[in-house]
Length: 441
Image 1: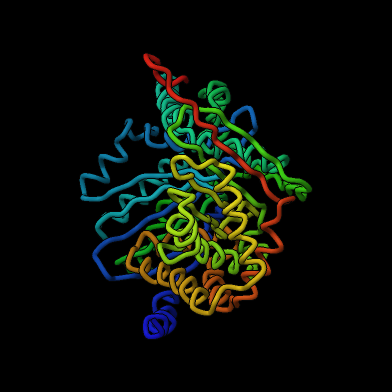
Image 2: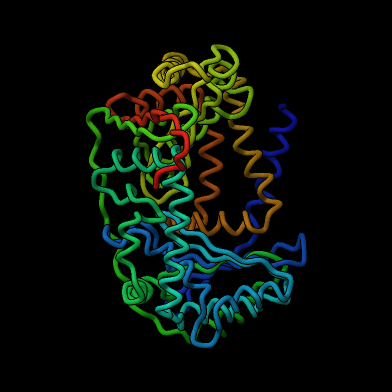
């Protein structure tokens, strides 16, 4: 184990500190380029600083719907032509929307770089929003929402917990939107959203792969440089007030088993790097595999859970949530699992994890970063995510903070944040499906 950890410590600087060419074009587009010649491929990722948190409440889901529409044609490209052109040269492409940003990506053979840049510049400046296409794609998104959330009891509970946990901050809204808000979105609303947020000065372009950085920058300037700078709408700065009492929500849905979800307000890495690193380690100590506490004690030992987890991601621009939860074993009540989870949390608060637990958790986190370096996509994504948090160079500080976590730090953040008054609890109460009736929508 020591030899593996030592290898990670020694190899990480070689993998993570590759030269990054950085430039801001005259129109405001931020460009990051990193040469990585492991394979004759290039990854292009284009981030727009707009996500679910930037939407008017009555138009929740508009960023995600606009992401879909970016594949439906421009003034020069027909519907789906973008993807066909990428696939024709052996590439892949897609996109996703989060609460904080929207990202479009393509991975292509190196000689396809200019094609991708030309297509992305075209979409940034000349998107076509055909009314019939908008209505058709809106129906697709509404069906996606129905399948992934309204017909999924655990996902529905997650939405309920977020809506209860956040009273002010727009993180309470689902990225996909609500069914009612989606019905409010038409071509005009999408055009306004596109004009407000899809501009060079509100975007970050990341290129990683088998390329020559200066030549790649020349191509970026060629295709994006002529695009006109536009003023971008300022992002709302809303701060969630401190929670001063436990909130509980109950959801009665057709399901086989109960489900428990507990959420605590916590900082992100940007607000509190050392605490965020300790919270990352805490999540691993509790549920980082079969050797972690939840599996050993709740699944195998006490047999109170079919599965239990701790989940936390520090790489968000604003404070979010630390989650605990799980599914009780058949015949066990949700409240029994909830109490067992709390008992494990209290044990960490009272006594720091052992040195073996601490090293295992830190090793798992570092190993995930190390193994991710084999992926061009992951390397580009690290640059993009940290840049959106403020500066791509923060990734070095992130690793340093993880390495510096002590056992007492893990107990300290558990005591500080995993408190009853700071929690929102969701309980899924299963209802048996009535014979002859399908799921209610």
